[in-house]
Amino acid sequence: MRKMILDCDPGHDDAVAIILVGNNPEFELLGITVESGNQTLKKTGRNALNLVQFLELDVPVCLGATNPIIKEVEICDAIHGESGLDGFDFPELKIDFDSRHAVDFIIQSVMNSTEKITMVTTGPMTNLALAIRMEPRILDNIEEVVLMGGSFQNGNVTPAAEFNVYCDPEAAHIVFNSNVKVTMVGLDVTRKVLTYPAIIERMEKVNNHVSDMFVKLMKVFNENQKRVFGFEGSPLHDPVTIAYLIDPTLLEVVFVHCDIDISHSTSYGRTNCDIFDYLKLEKNIYVAKDIDVKKFWNIIEDSLKRY
Ligand code: RIB
Ligand code: CA
Image 1 (cartoon, rainbow, N blue to C red):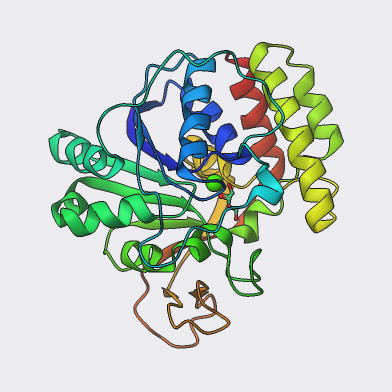
Image 2: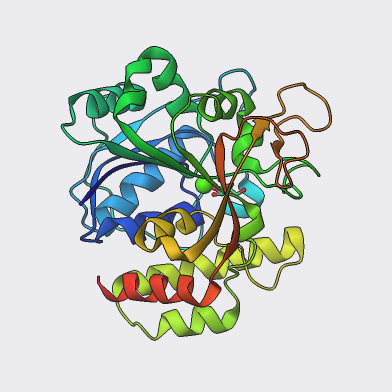
């Protein structure tokens, strides 16, 4: 089993990442750590608790950074709504957060583990970056970091930058320069897995309480993406990270030099991936270039069916 910590900012697509990892026998999910991003920490934290309770997961949820390391919080309520997870009415919350701060949880879990831990981040990388700065020795016991974020093409918040990296470029800079194995699952592939109505109809046929939640959340996600971007289906960004760990053949990945633009120019927060190796700089990041879309939706459907 792969030991994993999922760091996220639920978020509709983060919710699907939690669905995927929550009951997969290949993973030992040690904990879910949360930060601000799609919404404020108060809301992303509550959303994570609601999901853990609804999915009946025996997993600690630890609150983390309220703000990025340097920048102020920039939420994404246009897409994820006032609650950060609009579209589904969860039952009354009966569980509470773990008392440990997310950064302490990451440090303690990694330092005390007899096996290496995989860090998956699907929000801004603030918690992981702070953990690396507070206790750099965790890098010796992290198998790899798989993140949803960045793009070697266009951004989705500015022409240059993708939301998770744009929220906290300095955090991404710390992680990308930490010499741990980093696999970047960016917009280049996540924009190819779109929750078209036909996909929603397919998942509705699974006909259990989790597929019902998936359908209701995706319908609101679609409405918001249509209004903001004109998309007929929403890019289901975050679960691509987990799907890749379930089946590494899902993605075509290339090893390149990549650095984060922290220059405060109009490219602030860009993941500068040297896909064609123009600069002949030392390669440091694995970047997803393509995705098997059919395989992805099969993984989503299989995961929903297991609940
Ligand atoms: O740019 C997409 C990312 O930003 C996803 O993780 C989504 O949840 C938002 O956090
Ligand atoms: Ca997210």
